[in-house]
Length: 141
Image (cartoon, rainbow, N blue to C red; front, side, top):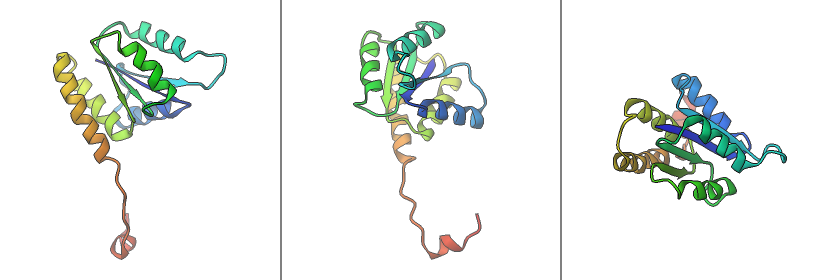
């Protein structure tokens, strides 16, 4: 299973770099930074990335639902039953997805879909308001 992080500007690259720092470089993790240069077409970047990783199971992760990156990817993913699209990337989700893809690279499509739904919840749980109180302020981190 391949993972392609795609975002406006450099968010996808930052996620890639951070995931690589924490988990080590992974051959199945890729990124696309869209709209950094007006002369580079996002769809062309996408086609080039896909051509390098073949036509196997791919999970695309975008920065924001309804954004241009996500909307363009929707057109590509709709054509393939073995491609998945998740929007709203965050680091907890990306790390868990990468770990899953390494541990279970040969899972069938239905299992992958179920796992992605579970991982989306993991990503949501990773977003929390941290409330500070007097006790927290005195602790030494």
